[in-house]
Image (cartoon, rainbow, N blue to C red):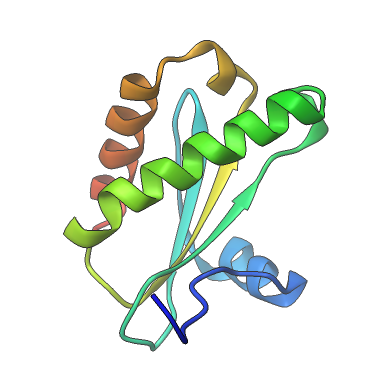
Amino acid sequence: MPGTDRTLRKKSEFSYAFRTGKKRVGQFMVVYAVKNGLNENRYGIVTSKKVGNAVRRNLARRRLREFIRKTDRGLSQGFDVVLIARTGINSANFKQIVEEGQQLLKRLGL
């Protein structure tokens, strides 16, 4: 979307989501969601060194970005969503990641 930034970048934005957002935990990811007062969703992705080396972390980020790209249209808008990759994400196939992510977002009311 030209002209709009749909990515969480500031530490304060992530901290607010962690502090006040609803949280759901899955096998491959943890999802936080909090209302943002905007007309669109904004996303942030966290991959710690527990996920693996730089190659593995980047793979996890790419997979989560693709999951977001595929599912954003069907979601309720107006939320900040933070996805945290868990250690098992790189052993899962993409279909498993999508299914779990959709289930977690549904449980959060999105």
